[in-house]
Figure 1 (cartoon, rainbow, N blue to C red):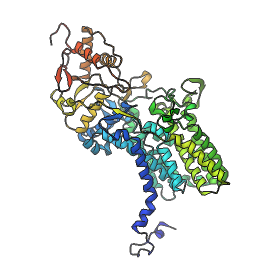
Figure 2 (cartoon, rainbow, N blue to C red; figure 1 turned 90 degrees about the horizontal axis):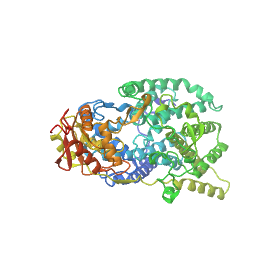
Figure 3 (tube, rainbow, N blue to C red; figure 1 turned 90 degrees about the vertical axis):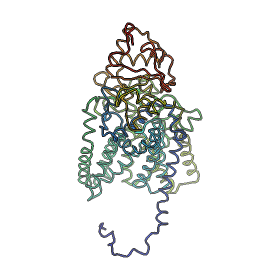
Length: 623
C-alpha cells in the first residue's frame, strides 16, 4: 500500500474505531514505564551528587568532573561573548587550548547553558550525567523493540543492562562523553533505516545530523560505533541467506550514506579542521595504550561498583576506577555464548545472519579491547595482539583500547534481549529447563546490579571568588591563579574559574589547567601544560611537601615565568584539595612567602599582587 493510500483525506470522517486518548496512553504505557524505571535508576546511581550538587564531588575522579564543569562554564562564556567554542585562551594562558582536540561536548555546553547560568556548572554536570544514563537505557530499549524483539520485557532487560552495565557505570565516575550510550543507539537506528526504499534523502539527512551531534558529544564512541557498524554490515551482507537482500538495498544505502557524509562534513568542517590541523593540536593522547587495555581476567571479574563488589568480589586490576570497562563476571561470560548457541539452533536463516554478524562484532571488539599486548591481569605476557598493527594509525592512535569493550557490552545486551524473548515466547521442554534458565539469568545478572558512584565533600568556593572580590585586583580577562597552579591533580583553581564564567560579567584567565595538548615526544599529546620552573616548584610543595630553597636565582626565574603568563595576582585559599590525595597547604604558603614576601589577607584568601617584570623582587631590591 502506498503512503497516499494509507493516509485518509482531510475531509474523511474519522473511523468509528479511532483510538481514544486513554487508549493512546495505554499504548504508550510500556515506553513510559521503561523511561521511568531508567530515570529512577539513573537518579539512584548519581544520588550522592544529587544530595548536595554544590558540596559533593565524585570521590574517584575529581579531575574529570572539574574539566566538564569548566566546559559548562565556558559554554555560558561562549554564548555571552561570542567566542570560539573550539579554541580558548581562558586556560593555559597565554597559548590557549584546542578544545576541538579535547572532549568538549559542545552540544551539551550549548543546550544546557541556561541551566548552567541559573544553577551553576555543578548542577548541570549531575543533570547531564543522570540523563545520559537514563537516556542510554531508554534509547537501547526503543532500538531493541523497534528492530530485534517484540517483547517489551526482553527489550527492557537488554536496554537497562546496556545503560547500567559495569562499563557505563564505571564511566559515570566523571565522563559525560562515555556515559552517552544513547549515541550509538540512535546512530544505529538511523543506519538500519538507510535501506528503506524511496527515503534515501530523508534518512541520509537524519544520519548526517546525528553524526554531527554524536561527534560533538562522544567522538571516540562515534568512531567505535562506525567500526562496529562496518563489521556488522559486512558480515550480514556476505551471509548467504541475506546477501541478495543486501545487494538489492545497496544503491539506496549508498545514496543515503553519501548524503549523510555531505551533511556531516558540512556541519563539522570547522571542528574537524580544528581537531586535525588547528592550532595546538596533537596526535595521540598522552595515555599509554598498553596500560589502558583490558586483560583476559577483566572479562570474568566483577566490578567494584556492584553487589558483587560490595560483597568483596571486586578487583583492582583496572587502570583506575573509571576504566572498569568490561568486568561482566564469569557466569555472564558463560551465559552469553550458551545463549547464542541456543538462539542459533531455532533461528530462521535471516536471523542466523544477524546472529553471525552480532557474534563477529563481539569477538572482534573483545580482541581489540585487549590492546596491543596480551595481559592476564596487569602485566604483559609477551604476545602482540591485532591492536598493535592499528595503534599508530590515525584515530586509533588517540583511542584507549579498553573502551572498545563497551561495544561488547552492547552486543551482550542485544543477546540478552533476544534470548529473553526466546525463553518467554517459545515452549520449553520441562519445568526444570525453565528453572535452569531463570537461575542462569539470576546468577549472571544479580551480582552486576550497580551501586551509586561514590562521592565525598568538596571544599567550598572561596568568598574571594564567589563574591567577586577578585575583580578589585585583576583587570578584565587578566591572568590570575590559585596556588598551586591548576592541574589534573589540583583542579580547584580551574573549578573557581568555571563558576565565575557561568555567572557572567568580568572574567579572569588562568595559566596551566587540566586539558590535553601538545608537548609530548614526537608531537604526541600530553596532559596539561609543560611545567615551568615556578609552577613545578609549587606543585612539588603541594603534592610532595617538598620545600625548595628560594634564592635570587629562583626569584629571577619566577619573574620570567610570571612575565610569560602575564600574571596579575596569585592567591591561596584557607583550604586546598587534591584530586587523588590531600595537599600540603603549609608547604605552599611557606614557598609563596619565601618567594613573594608577605601577602595581603583579602577575605578568605592570602593574596600576592604581581607587578609585571618586577615581582618577585630580589633580596637586593626593595618591593
